[in-house]
Amino acid sequence: MNRKIAIQGVKGCFHEQAARLFYEGHGLGAPDIVECATFEDLYKSMDNGLADSAVMAIENTVSGGLLPNFELLRKYDRKIKGEVFQRIQQNLMALPGQNIEDIKEVRTHYMAINQTREFFKDYPWIRLVESEDTAKSAAEVAGNGLLGVGAVASELAAELYGLEILAESIETYKQNFTRFLILDDSLEVEADKINKASWCFTLCHKPGSLAHVLTILSFYDMNLTRIQSLPIPGQEWQYFFYVDIKFDDYLRYRQAFSAVRPLMEDIDILGEYVAAI
Image (cartoon, rainbow, N blue to C red):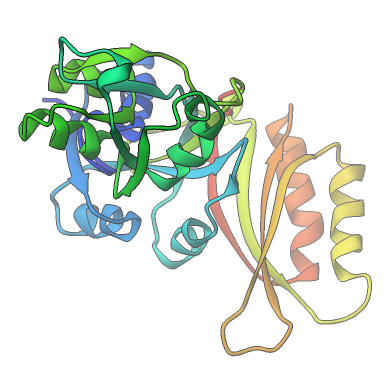
């Protein structure tokens, strides 16, 4: 029986591509997709038994981190068990039999619009319209038989909804990747293969506290690949720190954790897993 994987968006979106890339790539079979309207709904679908696990975007190489999703990682007790990097390739698509000169309007998510503005400068007669989701835009064009209306979405969306790609890879920056987290409690990760961890912690409010932690991590050869701070609600100028750490030796990592733990007022290990790259 295939795993039921919750994604934010509808079938054909980049979240589904990421889910397929991870689960099929690890020999776990094709996932059954559970569509969710919001990222918090991912967690609710797991809590309600509608999904076995979830795939959630956390950062993009062009637009940066999805800050509300860091808060969700802390709020819900679901550990990160893996990650996957998905290239975001945007494609212009429409009902078959049309060409780009026939298209007067294109619908897609606002982030996709931002990623493809340079392409559309060569087609000033096309009006760009924001929508909820890239793949949902493709589904609406197909489902409503909208001639003269295109969508910008993934190749998978074009395949699922029977649309024809008029121009492929129209994003401005070709090195456009999104990092997705795998939230799947059923996955067991062998300790000797773990080489990445994600933490959330707070520190006492005094000069040098964060620098002290970073110095110790450096001493233990921990590679800090990301650090993100977010305010603690109701506490003035106090912050949660979210960090991703890569390492070559799991035992050395545990020694580093033991060394910095006394310096932290509160720490939550969000996940220990195998890095995608």
